[in-house]
Image (cartoon, rainbow, N blue to C red; front, side, top):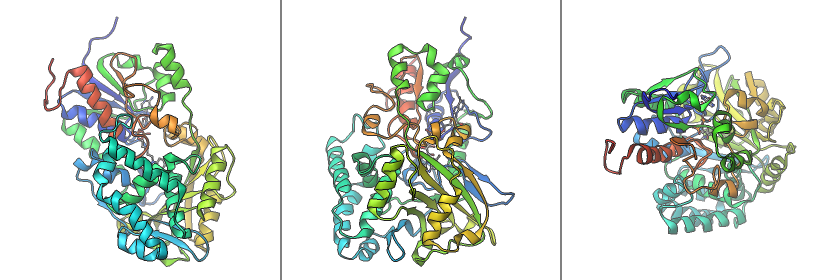
Length: 477
Ligand SMILES: Cc1cc2nc3c(=O)[nH]c(=O)nc-3n(C[C@H](O)[C@H](O)[C@H](O)COP(=O)(O)OP(=O)(O)OC[C@H]3O[C@@H](n4cnc5c(N)ncnc54)[C@H](O)[C@@H]3O)c2cc1C
């Protein structure tokens, strides 16, 4: 016999999407509880003091262009710090691509490609709100079909690369590589369209005090509206939540199968089993004694540095990893939070965040490879390291069950799995189980700290399970 229903909504997982869903539902007046397996809420937006020091390190996400642009997170008064240079890309000993927040400065440094960069970015900047609405929406039914078509043409242009300079080509390639898959690809181009232009609009900020502050703001909002976040509360079976009228799963497809597999209709279960996971991230947190001794001094002002060499080298490394092979020179994303938020360091102690793209499930400790990549552009970096901690790809899943084999996107970001994320269905958030919904990065719009999957899923729950209609704040029944 089912237990009596005593709760409106249970959310499994307190990543940015689970918390966003809980915010929307608690604000609507429903009773909401979030169940989180870990000791701290936040999923991919958690920070921690490491190495017996008071310096705070971001364990997963560190840089937040998606949060700054997200219609959901923009409702919150987040304290975001903006580096003068959102992202930069050293190419060889003499050449570095720099994307300043200021478009004019970026174009000026790109020389003959400056005019082309402006022609590419200016229309995107002008229509930034519409572009963001489409790319952070439910990607299958874009609210603005003309904008969606325009984005597709620009994504294609980004993949073709009409820039002559190494710098402009590498800047785009470094952002394409956020797709964590084969390059060039329309998906990589789409990510470049979004993130490159955001560098010149809402920015690539770093939250003051670390990414945990984003999670803290959402938890505070849930609690202010009567909701509750339970930590150390792993859910092993969705039937444990039979006391809730609706359940939202902030989980990767593998987690959904673990919790509900035997209850799911065969067709849906098989489709979830077929979801492909992508290449992985292998992370290192460094505590260093001083700022990175970049050969190109301008790099000290960059919040994010893409270490990948030329466009061709970035593509080669990404393609090797997508094919399941270790790249000789892996693509590395590095963030130096103090470029945006000097309060993140202490005298003689600074945090550096870096991860390399590696094959799915790779057990190799990435520390040596990442140091070697940084040393090429910052000789002497090795001597500034006070302490470091690595999370190989194969160990990420133990930290967060959603990172299957170290895939930080909760499912590979391929064209097929963008259009059918996680499986091809009219409503990607609703499962065939009564009252059970998905809300993680495995649903549209995909990975990143934006909370939009949570918002979209919660809106469906309000409408389908509680009879809310837009404009009403209370349930119809
Ligand atoms: C190394 C790394 C760097 C990244 N860098 C960035 C970045 O700079 N900027 C950016 O925007 N994004 C970045 N990301 C991606 C971003 O963190 C994720 O896309 C985002 O966190 C996804 O949010 P989510 O809510 O879908 O799931 P998650 O954040 O993955 O949260 C899922 C939560 O569910 C919990 N959980 C899982 N199973 C259970 C269970 N059975 N019971 C209870 N709880 C459970 C987990 O413990 C976790 O807290 C990065 C990710 C990683 C790993």
